[in-house]
Image 1 (cartoon, rainbow, N blue to C red):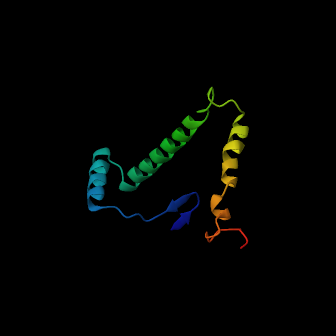
Image 2 (tube, rainbow, N blue to C red):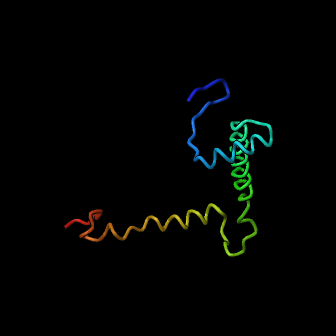
Image 3 (cartoon, one colour):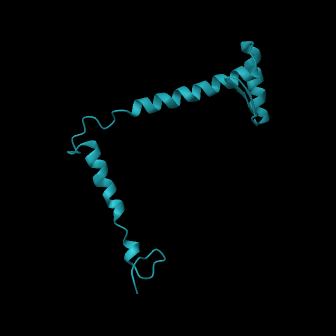
Length: 98
């Protein structure tokens, strides 16, 4: 990788069919293959951010959870404290004293 200020040059591996299709699109749009790759990266980043933003507030207005969100999380995670394998004498994770 070569860093040039805010730009990073990187090497990627593409299949022959991908290169052929990129070249055809680049020729049609009169742009470079690199510009198309940057455009594709920007699109993926934008879609990921949009998906994340769309997830905010998903639980708002739910009537099946009567607790505060934090209280609900703590109650659910309390189940993690129950480790039945620790009390099993044959378990390698057992804390039982023989």
